Length: 143
Length: 143
DNA sequence: GAATTAGTTGACGTTAACGTTAATGTTAAT
DNA sequence: ATTAACATTAACGTTAACGTCAACTAATTC
Image (spheres, each protein chain N blue to C red):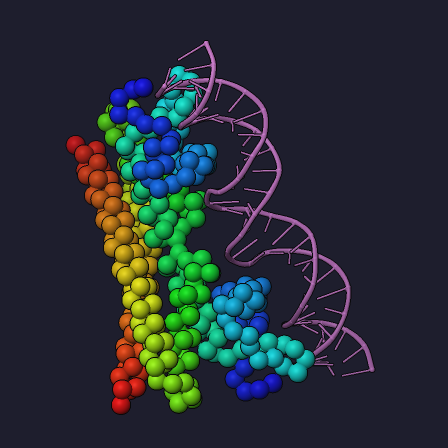
């Protein structure tokens, strides 16, 4: 077994996702295909776990479908693609366009997130109000 | 038609939910059964629209299933139950218990929400980081 | 009062996001 | 070299949250 790699069972335990879910995410392209052992076992690194955790968090917090998550996660991948080796290959114009695109997408996402933050605070305000009202009602009892 | 009431089509338009969805929410108890016209048409008030909008927001922002939403919405209902007429009916001890329960539930929800707020900010931070990196890459091009 | 238009229930259809099982192959440990 | 423990694909099952008819009734408009 190569150094620093693990099989799906450990990834499952460490990420909190079921093995089925991990394979499913690969199947629909949310995580890239991994390396395989000679026998065909999927081999993962710590980076995979990291990604899975972030996926779970984003899904949970943003309430996104996996399809919507793709776009979100795509940003990360695109940025990765713009590194090192790629820098010299592509022509500057195309690269600039792509980066502008990344910026635009990021801005779009940030706008959506800001909206959600606003909404979530309004929901919290409601809860705090409930508490206040409940407290007041309690006080009235001991009259 | 009674004053200030509307039929499902208008509610659908004003809430942004489909008629099917509105009936479905009633079916599974997310909204209470409404008054009916003599012929059996559902009659809604502005309060229903308000509730539906808040349901949509909470669902959207918190990423809750409808079942999970029930508990959340239950708070509102319980509090409503603790008003006016009910105050004299129930005995103080029971009422106090119930109110304490409401407070406890509210606190629980607030904790969850705070956690989500934290996570969502961390996601936003990631996005801002992507932007920074993309900007930097762009600057490097015009060298 | 006839024809639209909008509402009702009932039931079956759909999609996403996995769970579960079966048949089969791989690794690790004895 | 066997076994036990874990992996793979394939395929069918499940659940939530609706969409979409169909058959029928009520309300509105001309």
